[in-house]
Length: 361
Figure: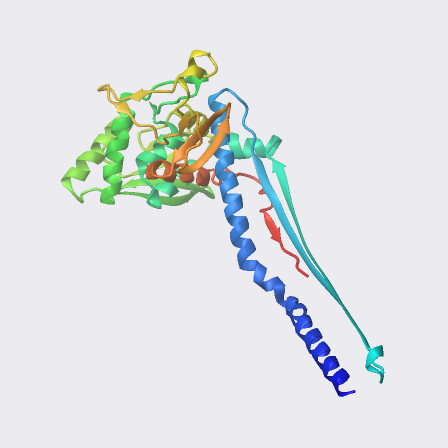
């Protein structure tokens, strides 16, 4: 009798130990939040980079771009457990029986919804020009004015930027790069700024040149005024969308749409020589200054037959890998800036942002 009781005590102690892990599963939900948020954030960010580069490469080869939005992310976890205990105790030790059973189940059901950018949303997101006020806000926030204008501006007061798209490829006017060089120096000195006024109940952007700070800077601002055909004495100029200003106190900026931006940048993508020889793609665009000096592309996108081992982003296309070197810091920054610009061209009613729902139980 004493031996049987001792066995039963050991048996129920074992049952208690087995049950403890299942009682702790009640708090599994909060533990998944930090892990899932980070994992999905990284996954969506990487997929966004791959989608952007892939579409640029497709445009380079004359293929149509396709963009998909991640409209929702739902990840559901389920953990279930079942324990069966049984014991029969008789006075006779030969009639004692004990039983133990346990089952467990873990289920992970991620559901991701993609929404293609079509119709009105395509027109808003990809074909609408970036507002001039958004460009000035970027300059005011500290982004280099020469970089912002090279990417987002097609023409300013009749001075044209280059365009690499085959349909209307053109080189930049000689004054364009001289204009950007001087505006960058003025920006570095803090002598250029932005102010927003209300005219007829509408916001109007003003570009302001702060004069009499430094003779060298004043000379630069005078050169900028001459290139743009502005009043040499004025310090404030209305900034409007368009190609031709109404007077010498107005700056007309013809901005690009996001589609025009990626078409222009895709013209610089390196492609295999065999593809050019076979007429599958045109040669890479080469831009030069008025002195004949080659202008370096804003984003250096390479190509190779083998997958690179150290890439910031890489996509396969036509048995070739197109990629940005992870050690090319400038290309990485401008590529990331390009994706940020995509959010500036949204006009009208906004769609819902991606939702991450993680039910646990």
